[in-house]
Length: 345
Image (cartoon, rainbow, N blue to C red; front, side, top):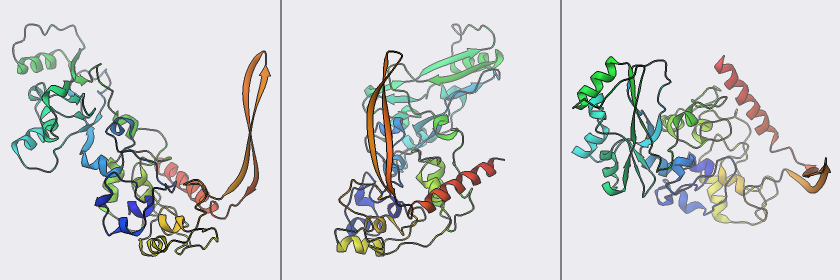
């Protein structure tokens, strides 16, 4: 379903199923889907392609060990590698174990200076063949309601006992020497956006994998948490363009693109086009990629002086506007936002 809407915006295109990669080779971005990247720094930026994101087993991870002081806010959650890559072993069990507070003191998060990835603990890093010498442990922070001296405790269990008695919070904080990982509040708590499926009640065919991706994938699209949340809150059904050159704009005939349009399944988010490929064969391929033929516009720039200060001014003049293929999308976007606002009430 992702390929039907977004084309081949994946890091490993060899894993595209159902022969999609054989139908039509293009790097054009439809514009419905947000751009995505394949370098590991995409984890911190929040723009990884879906196949890379899910291959890293990323999840929002707690950084607090103990919370006794309720006057202080909770420690934030961060996106980390929290499970191994599907192999069963002692290392996997150590990586994915739920630790007691005392055990957690010995198994805090680490960040790789080589890859920039943050792992829930050192055992998780070893599942991905990270070298111990490349790992930077996170700092342990203790914040107590009352002044407390931990210099004389001799075991991890005594640290936890004293912290509990003195109403302390214990949490991990990222080292100053590494890049700040992505804070889950950035992902999950942005105001006024859709992060659940079927808020609009327009999702007709339930798919558990789409719902899982909506709840976990990190790459915001408009007022959706990600493109998968858009997929499970699609526009209302409308008459589809399911063949090539219905618009009369297609200027470069390609039999493989024609086949791709006809054979690729329908996507609910490429309306009014049946799928990504039907869009491509109803557009003029000589214009820049991902540009619709909706408007002809002139943009002029001038410099003006106000109170001895210079400012640049831009003027936009629309000479022509073809609203046929954008009207439904604008209406549907407004409807989606209205439904989301109703769902919050």
